[in-house]
Length: 136
Image (cartoon, rainbow, N blue to C red):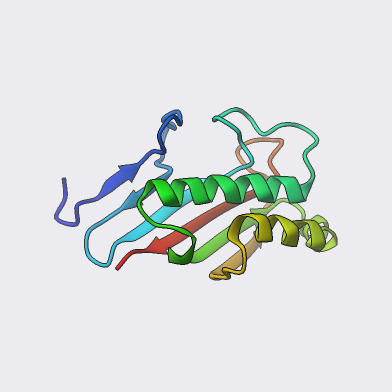
């Protein structure tokens, strides 16, 4: 235990990941940093053939699950970082991505960074999203 009461967060029923925490929280004005979430279900590999919009919905849903497991909720999310493997696909799929956002985050729009990358840890993943949330 450190002087900031650093604590790893693992949602109930989720398998413990190797090499990272799904989120961490610390004392103070508690900041929760959520590791990048993929469109995984129950820790399995990302299913082949999912549309970019469906990957966004699943990744955001996983992110919200981790944020809630850490004791926060959607309004506490202050920052998102999203990594996509194809910016043209992201731009073309804006309506589907927007629908996925509305289904998971509603009208909550935190600060966000979007970055194109050459690949993600799961070869079927086309999006990975991380977050920071703050509790009073």
